[in-house]
Image 1 (cartoon, rainbow, N blue to C red):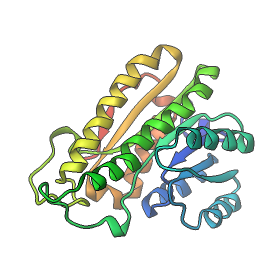
Image 2: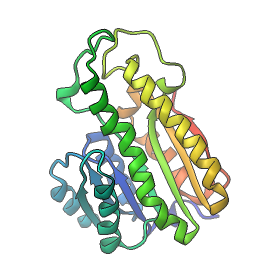
Image 3: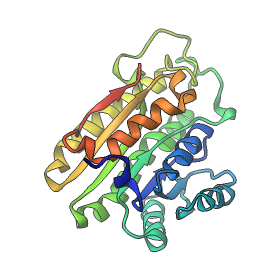
Image 4: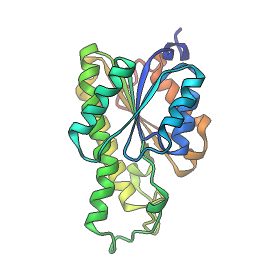
Length: 234
C-alpha cells in the first residue's frame, strides 16, 4: 500500500513558512522528497532556507505576497508553477510575530488592529486557496491542509492575550477557518480535491513529530477517504 513514498517528487505550496515550527515541518517533509513553493507575507531569510532544502535534494522556491491583494496571490501561484510545475498540495499556516505578542483586552482592541490581523490570517488562507484551486481543478486532484487552533471549537477562559488560545481574536478567526474548510470540502470533493484541517493547541507548535505524522497521513493515499475533517491534537 502506498504511504509516505507517494510524496516523492510532488509539489507543495506552503503559505506561512517563515515561522520556526513551520520550517521544521518543511525540513522533515523535504526528507520525504517533497518539493516546496513558499508564500509569505513577511519572508525571513527565505533564500537561505530554499538553499537548505535544495541541499537535501528537493526543489524549492519562495515568493512574497501583499496582504489582501488578490492578484499578488494569483501571481505567486503562477511563479511557483513556472518553477516547480503543477501544484499537488497546499498547506496554510499562520504564526504571530514577536511584536504582535501583546495583550489585547476586548474593550481596547482597535478596529484597525482587528482588521489587520484578520487580513493577515483569515483572508490570506482564503486568497491562497482561491488562487491554487484552478490548478487543482484542471487536474481533478489535489489536497489542502489548513493549520488552525483548537480554540476555534469552544474558545476558552483567559485574559484576552493574543498569543494564547483564550484570545477572542483567536477563537473568532479559527472558528471561521473551521467553517470555511468544512464548507469548501463539501463543495469540491466531487471534483477530486480533498480539504482537511489540523487543530493545534499552544503546546503542539513545539512538538514537531506529532504534527509531522498527521500531515504525512493527510497528504498520503492513506487518507483517500478523509475530507472535510479537522484532526484535533489535544
